[in-house]
Length: 198
Length: 312
Image (cartoon, rainbow over all chains, first blue to last red):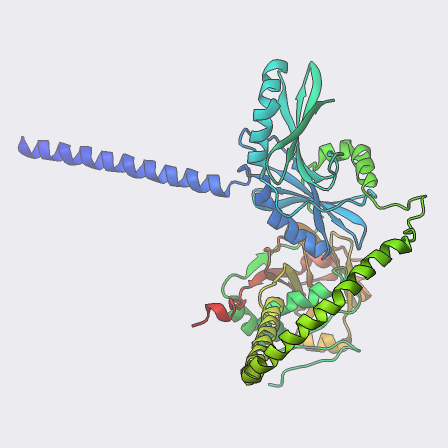
């Protein structure tokens, strides 16, 4: 009788230990997959080093002039894929890189003729920029007009006619029944400079 | 056994083992100064089988076989910068507004009224005499003081000069270190080995996705070297750290109309990757895809010093 009780205790302990081990293994695997999963969303700045490394191979004078989300932006300003556009004054050409999960998925020469200024080196990441836009007008717009965040883009001079030398985030909200909302966020200070509909 | 070293025209033949052992940063720097789209005769290398063993030893065990495809692999296309492309004209117009342009109005400065300049000169003249007296007294006092501290000043000047020289040398060493140790960029070296059982192609051509083409003539001398285990360096260049397809074409003799082969590359960022193409098993009837290939990464990079401040 006593031996049977002891045996049951051991079986229960072994069973519990097995469950704990399996749970830990499953958690570890899930965590590892999350980190290495190429669909893991990331903020815009996390992909810039890789894109810049490729751009320097393309042309040593290449400079980032523009970036935007290539896939849906989450609430925290992260996206599974971001697109980075570089301009070479020497080549007078543009080349785009689309980065996902720490890899360049697409590299594309853009057959366009523009002379764009490089964005400033210091700019706030997509998370704080989106938070500022949401707080200023985006959240209210989404609720009132059944809107959704459509695009986040970083550029210098393309959307700020008042101060074209400043690098800004432009957050674009779209709505099925209303004109889009544009929120311009200063990429240095994180302050919302202006909003407009169009 | 004598190591076969072959010279191919005006190109310099160096040992592939030296290539593998060379500082990757130095290689990267060399490539950086040249346009990435290099074409024309690249460096060729030929060496003995022992050197290949040295390459393998250098690279460690991470030599990975690479499949040479007969059909060009098709990769999924991902749309990028869709908002930018959709609003390109608007964005371009904004950028155009920021460009410098010639003004129709002349930008010459007008003449300054001479009276304004005279006022300033008159004040200066009035102050001059007083300043001269003050300066003379001050000068006398200073002469005495200077007599005592002149020697000290000379020593201080010498110390300053030494400081400046040290600072200049430190800046120069830091620049050298950055150039040759700390700026490894993503690069690729393609080497070829092995002698086909049938016939050596007259040339091998590599076509990159960027459109760059590198073609190397395989002379009888190179063929003799390959027969004895030599290795030919086809190219060494910067490459974007992304998945891309390299097209390989063999031409000449029985290879004239042979099919190309395709290798999918995925160069590791900021590292020197090697791709070895082996002709030993290649047959003209099956084209370039009958080659075997392998790749490895040169991870013998040197750790850059952080400068004298961090040294004991």
